Amino acid sequence: MTKLALFDGSPVRTKPFPAYKPIGEEEVAAAKAVVESGVLSAYLGAWHDDFYGGPQVRAFEADWAKAYQAKHAISVNSCTSGLYASVGAAGVGPGDEVIVSPYTMSASATAAIVFNGVPVFADIDPQTYCLDPKSIQARITERTKAIIVVHIFGQSADMDPIMELADQHDLTVIEDCAQAPCATYKGRPVGTLGHLGVFSLNYHKHIHSGEGGMITTNDDGLADRCQLIRNHGEAVVEAKGTKNLVNMIGFNFRLGEIEAAIGQAQLKKAPDLVSQRQNNVAYLENKLSGLPGLGMPKAQEKSAHAYYVHALDYDPSVTGVVRETIVAALRAELPVSEMREREGTLVSGGYVKPLYLQPMYRELVGYGTVSCPFTCPHYGGTVDYSEGICPEAEAAHNTTLISHELMRPPMTETDLDDVANAFHKVFENLDDLKNAKAVP
Ligand SMILES: *Cc1c(COP(=O)(O)O)cnc(C)c1O
Picture (cartoon, rainbow, N blue to C red):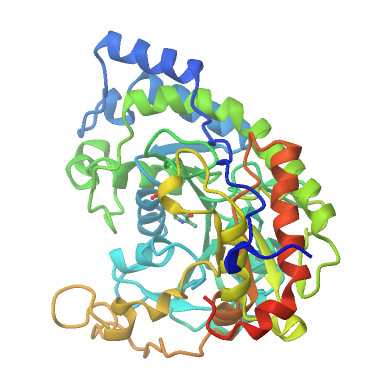
């Protein structure tokens, strides 16, 4: 048995893993052409043909709609702004509740608050880490207006029962697809399984334009409202003849022409980039299977996982070693990745703290000093953001889940072997880790 790097043995590998860099010549050419044209954005915040943006924005939207089999694709300058526009388009307002997963990036829930809605957190299914339909059902009240489903880590939530609930209770379903481009659910692409889907094009996502986002919908009315919220709706409704003024408080969520040109090139690369991740995960899982206490994500039937994160289930009661110790030992064996050196080795325990444990929810301070929207007089309910409301999300974060991002292209089989060897080495030394009380 070789000594763990954590205890001053030699690590499995020190040479950095290759950088994930989906940007190449195509993107350089696309960006250059826009810069040379001088038209870096053609939007007008008034009722005019250019209300819908310039040529690159429109071409990008047309390509995206085709790729995702959506009637409408509406570009925005981030997934966050796309979520805000979607919640606004759904008509959420003071007094409304929005059911959302707590196990996600903060914007998924903040989107409700922006329109004075109150986020109600439902628990996750520990198999997929996505919202559990049974928990959603238990949280529905007469105040519920919408559900924000997050396809976390790149795997679709179980959408059929969620859409059934939405139909029964007349709720709008927004899919946060930031981590799930090219993911499918029972053969259908995510993004149009609900009423609105929102994607991210930020630097850390599978494909990116630096910053950016895209909304997909098959509903003409929702598309129209998203476009108004994106581009100064309040100033446009009169000339456009829009009668429903609800939430027509406009923003500037417009994507630039450079980003839209880069986005078109990126969109073409997405299927291949995602399938490389799927192949790498299959290769890794084959090598990791059988390690004690370690479980692989369970693929839903006929559904494709996009693997933004390769989330492994870990049960410390099987090994007798706490998750943090396993993670520290793995990190000691493995190198950083190029371009992301400052983040350290891309293996971690848990994901984000369940959102209701953040200060905004703990202290109920949103708008101003009067606890709006949490105790807004228009809100007839009472919020419950106490620890313990979503035990599965808390367990996933605190004890069970190991997440890592070492399956991104261009990782080769040799690189992946190093990852697998590090896991094997750590799991062969569980006794040493058990005895090391002070780790990490
Ligand atoms: C990245 C991410 C977002 C936000 O995306 P931006 O484009 O950075 O605004 C929202 N939700 C989830 C689940 C994400 O991973």
